[in-house]
Length: 529
Image 1 (cartoon, helix red, strand yellow):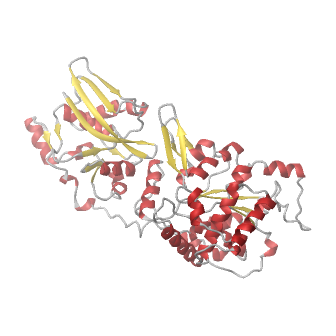
Image 2 (cartoon, one colour):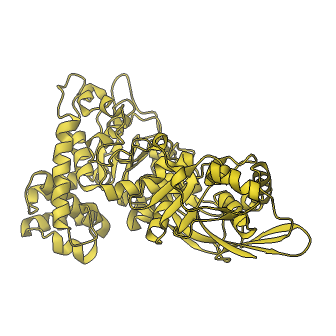
Image 3 (cartoon, one colour):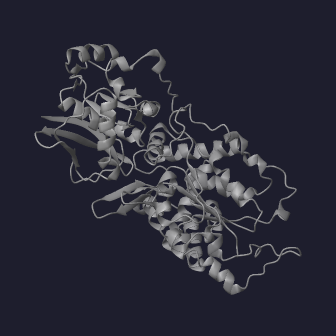
């Protein structure tokens, strides 16, 4: 006897369709799961055996072979438990599924038959929709998350016995006939109704209004730089003594970014779901851009992603948002160096013996640092003075390599508190966000027929075609390139910043003043610290 059930698992952050094939034959009772399963899948035999018995069914006393196809793809997780159990019941003649339904089955089983939630449901339900399935049978706890994918029926169950209508179960037990399911309508009731908030309206944090740039007194030039970074999604670094507000300024950066579009929201929510970090889904798709701030003790795998079957790291969890590295030189140098490829390619590629995994990593890098180990190199006052030797300062800055620093567009000095303590408040988050959103709209219109979304993504021939500098601005940039010994990468980044400044000023073409302002944000190239 042979049967086949469709299930799925995660492969990176994407769902992969898996066929759960079941074969029953004569021989000594034993169960074998083949198809490169991990330990959690091999242990599914005992979970499924206990669940089937405790739900009143009979576990087949035959030689059972369960194949997970494709057989050359390594599989992990507990999402196959329910599919294996239903496959055994169908193959042994105890259950018949609705013939009109093409169903994907997902879920982990407890020993009493309770169906437990599994991570990555969003990616797997999206796979089912694209694969032509009509319905998905999954844990009730994952139902709200799964319902975010429109255009496919999702049914949530809490127990293995929920698959069968209670009346039909009683009748068939009396006649010892197989349970024939006509449909899954018995899984729907008024108490199971789901309210999914529209992605354009939901997902706002209650604390988002508590942080505002109105709280920051003065620092007008830093706010200007942050607004430019947000408008073009440029990488930014703030440099200054302790207590000048570097961390506070960057933590308010999400308040001036526009919300995610529906396509971006689904993409970000799928990444969080695959990483098992999607805790609160009742508000619909994630609408605020991610803000990730890992500790400086993070490992390379934690930052980039890794594992025997790689999982997304912080750079992927910050996709379409901000990755904040506070006190950048405190991170291990080898950890920082792995950022170079994601910052250029906007993806992370992790190679393993059996496969190559690619994770999205399109993020804005925001970081802060002190000018020296003690932090007071640029705050020479009677009370505070630097105690670091030149060799210590050089060793401290050497933790950040030149190639990595070259990939940071804006390098901005944050002055000591004494310079702005009595300053009047300036622009708040709402005013800054309005300007940023207008700049984003200009870029969306300009790059409508390309794969580029923001000025920071321009490169090569497209950069030269989109940004044409007047002769005076070009001469200024060439003179600066020679005087500061800048690389061609820095040259291109200055051009892209100048275009963003032009967008903020609602001027279509870049002029000399825009290039001059962009040059002044290369503070570390000027070697003023």
